[in-house]
Length: 180
Image (tube, rainbow, N blue to C red; front, side, top):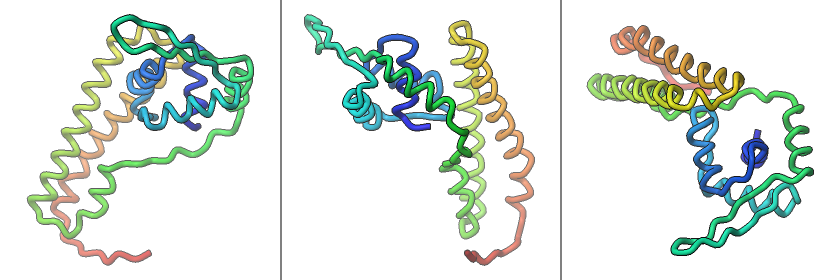
């Protein structure tokens, strides 16, 4: 699913500014789909050009004017159509796994530090996810709670996998040649 479709999904809940949309990405679905302001604002412009959203400028004294975006009926239809499209396989992008993948030539100390950093990052993400979920869960519907519980389960599983498999990998002496 692309950024534009997700923005339409958020706007189904009501008017939002670009900042509000960024907060929704970060706070609601950030673990499995995040977007920067550099992706959100061009997507909003495109959605407006396509007639899927409208914008309203709110004059504010003493601070910059606020732009609120609303979904149109055409935008709601587009969103519903996208929701009916086939589910695509997930694209996993993991800085952690790339660093582990290319670790063969690193020193033992570097490998140990890498794995400790990997574990610490995962534990930190789990702690943050649990705290955010605890704060926000009353505002979520059952489907949103399901996604948060999936996220927490995923992090717990990753930590468990790293803790169980790291020691053997760190003591492995096998040399492998890379081939494509």
